[in-house]
Length: 359
Ligand code: NAD
Image 1 (cartoon, rainbow, N blue to C red):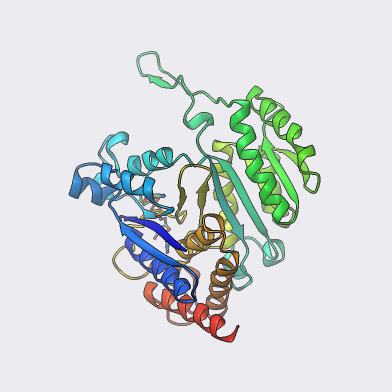
Image 2: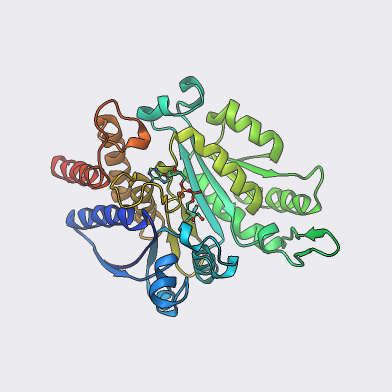
């Protein structure tokens, strides 16, 4: 199998972490059976400087011809004065929209070796394994009308969903739950919002088609609390765009570092994989960035885009071995000298190769 992967490394630590993630994919390819063809294109601030646009046409064209896209991060202080539609972040939003992925998958997993890094007590986080399925193309972030009328001193946004938009993302969540611990929590604010009433009615209507999955509904405010008190009780959490943005960031504290978090956006023409973190200008160019969020993102790519579950598991197990070994970057507060970005990448590759040899 020859798989075409577009790498859009972007700004700041983007190239550092995607470099290690690509190294991991090359190691997986060496295990045999498939080949990756990598293309590199510009996005974000570097694209503004070199090509005059945060998402050059060439990038979009190659993205749409690829089997999957790996993105690093975009953004930098030098662009902060630009209007929103000219900033590096606009390139990422345009790419997401053009690729059409409507389901954003964000795991929140309590790695045992990192239990001490979470601000929550180890006995609360231990065993937590949640996947958020956040609707990404609808709701308040895209609804019209939207405006800030400065003269009138008023501003408004619109939260809007159609039944079909709910159905397509709910199906992703039900299927995921069915392949995991078979529990789906749908989150809304149906006691106040009509949009949430449509959401809840639609999800409930689909449930009989997935008889092996237990469906529960939670109000978003209650969910925010339960996530911190009893995170182990969640398996798959389905929610709309704004609630998902907030809840998945809240649950990120469980893992102990932003640098650990992968994400996958699926359902469109081409799936997009990216670590959750930004371009981290404060540590860029110093080999300090944790590449495990980007490496986790290519594990998700192997699983969701290429159906290579065994290879994906091998990457997840390698990440776990590296965490247990203590060879980690400074954000994970190792007992000894912090490892550099390439040292962590190399350790993950060695663990993958060692597993392949012993298998
Ligand atoms: P950030 O995620 O870049 O950094 C927040 C903090 O976490 C910083 O202290 C940083 O050093 C640390 N951090 C982030 N990733 C890390 C990693 N892999 N390893 C170790 N430490 C890590 O968020 P920010 O500082 O708010 O934003 C910086 C720039 O990134 C801004 O321009 C912002 O718009 C952009 N941004 C981009 C994305 C994206 O590309 N998806 C997401 C968020 C922010």
